[in-house]
Length: 234
Image (cartoon, rainbow, N blue to C red; front, side):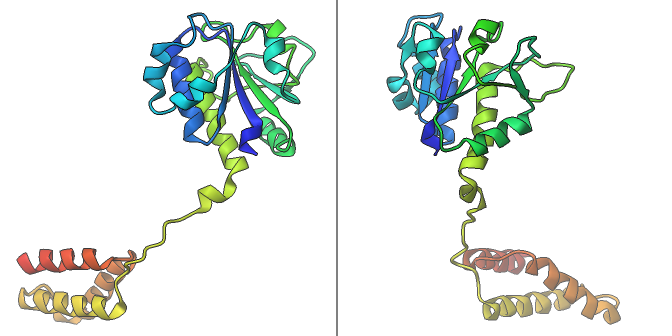
């Protein structure tokens, strides 16, 4: 489903930003990045330098002479805009934008971003189905092109790859209770010798608190050995 989503940069001014955008796409599993009338000659070494490992995306990037050509391969187009437009087009909140993507995730989706200085023109937006805005502080609403794109990539990644975020690395070397109890007996013995348990009547509650502290983490065998060495030296 992720491969059904493409990103279109209309008249991007800085090739460095194109490289950053390619990197953002690759971070979240997207592959399709196209350009419409970039300001500088393409391909561009500056873009390659900032793509940091995402040059494969840049190599497949197509350059279009107009936005009509760039949007031909998509069924639904979303336009990113930092400001409200006085045109007859449905404006979506960012939440509505994500919900709309979820509903249309089996269709070919294109998301267009405008040039860094001015954003998309009304003529560009006319080729879209919807307009959306990334919510930011009203005190400073200008977002770098690549930053805007990576926010969108991350939010779409959560929608299109929900299982990935739920994956958790399983600890395969968690120490056994027997080993932990041996360590704890050793610790109790050392603390007893150092006169830690004062007054004596509080020893039971102090040991319980210590056991709870260590019980909140799943220690590996290596970690248990390190702790044993630390307390032994102390």
